[in-house]
Length: 289
Image (spheres, rainbow, N blue to C red):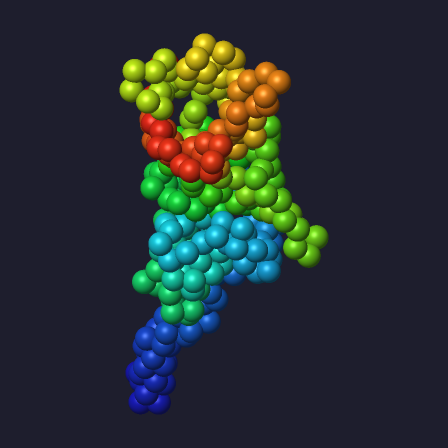
């Protein structure tokens, strides 16, 4: 082989070695970070981000505080979780798309809230969020309805806020509009349907209250401890807090009214009621069935 041919062969080999060494680094520097596209397909929905102004409003509606535990179901790029974390809340996002979940973690790192903002790459229907005190979501009505039985089993007083879509016949406790977008708030109600009995003074006959319930809407009948029927008025149920008035018709001399407030805990209600002179008396009711 001629010397110049040998030198050329060696030069080409050297160049190929350098090229082979540098290509991975060049490819690495040109790799683009994942960027989601509005309208891209997801597991059950397409991705459309909630405007930041509405995110803020939804968290305001939930009266979010640092004492809360917040879950965002279908958390997308993580903006709602990150916003909650900036308010000092321990917030968790559940996102099925692994690229979106990873993007959310990067966004949280950029905003300096990784200690408060966590993301789960998983299915919202397979994730336990029962310990949350605030839940946010932007899902289709059919998915809201599918989640509803789980939500109604959560601790009374849990706040649920949805962007755009309702919970069918479970009417919201509050509705707000921001920049043409709507948000709905529900407060998980305690289960109060049934027959409740109590007496104010030992030895008296029991007062009996029979309640019927559809979500936070409650109505019923009352039988007084003197055997007479009373009128039940102004029943209000917010989370585990219940209030109502009982009016006893006493004839021409007028009516007697008692205003009750109480906290529901399982099959017990404890609270106070006011009598005619404005003083308060403690009461405890027990559910019979």
